Image 1 (spheres, one colour):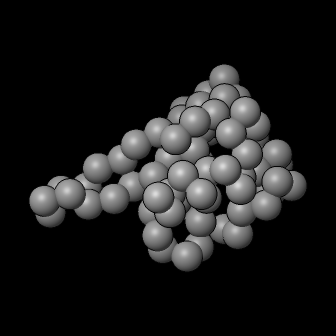
Image 2: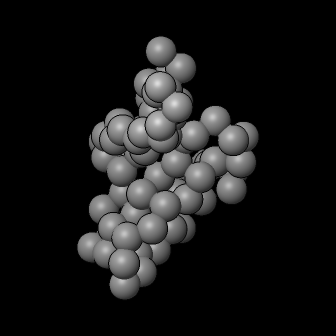
Length: 72
């Protein structure tokens, strides 16, 4: 999925939490909870193990700010 503000706003909650990932394959995604809260997520590997970290909540942390946070 290509992330834009419009596409992120369009993501609706489901009965369980789910994640959508950006198409570029660099581990950048957004987690949508059953209550509708949206949080930025970054998946990476450290010593061969998959790890993930939460960057912040949308819209408090914008799409542009979340992209910058993954590049540093």
